[in-house]
Length: 355
Image 1: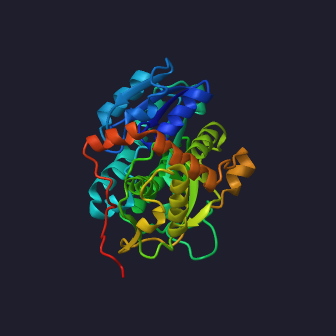
Image 2: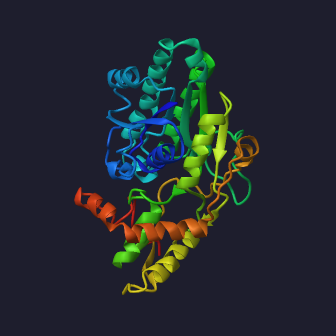
Image 3: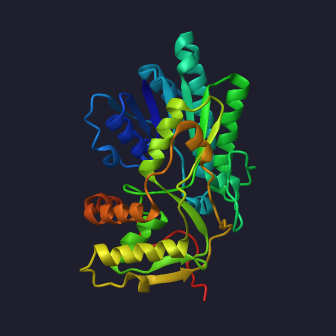
């Protein structure tokens, strides 16, 4: 099977590309615009494989997308290309509307036209896998879980744009019979995550003795999913998921932001024993909460386990240990990002102290 992966130079997309090349017989075409958060170093390990090809294009560019589909004639599309940082969506929602909504529409239409050129047997096995987020469901209280039947209630420009793209995918399946599967995942973490997200922000700030910012009182809870576990789930959904269905993917690893940051600080104390900034927990500073900050996300991932046999294999303690070790051992990767002008010294949003 030849699989087109959009956003394959990003964090989750590159994990999918690496897994497909390393652990499956599939061919992979990586379509990526190479925005600020994309990095071809993420797929450097597989870039020389004869089953891998790269195409630089914007998913909003309909002629370019159509040309790439005509050239490579993929048997499946895994759609991961998206603007994904909530803070950035608050500061500048326009890019999120364009990429996540218009880009998904453009890709769906291109896939529909592409299928018209394929034989009946090829159309029958084609899949369009749309990769989304649990943030489309809004926020939970202190109990309960998101299921595949949870009503949508997005609270940020980012989650609203992803909810919109989910609805487009559903409509193209029901109206045009495009064979789709959709997945909604919890918070990912692991190697190669762009240093604007919480975990790499904390690791690099601790390493360099800078303030570690935590929104509000750090009470917001997330279900943490190791990116390699997520990649395995996405491949399983593509290969064995039922057409028209949705699968929630979660790590079964709930932590408050404060508990997460304290755990990271302890791992930094252990794995960077020569650091002059130990104990790193003293670097924590509470900053003004971001607007509309959802209290809690938690995924009920029973369906994918029951129907497809997938379950997370990496605990949050082990996954964070691997992640901290990776950032400590791969300074070349994040140093190159800094040299391109990215400032990871702060998180976006208001940073006045809360007390």
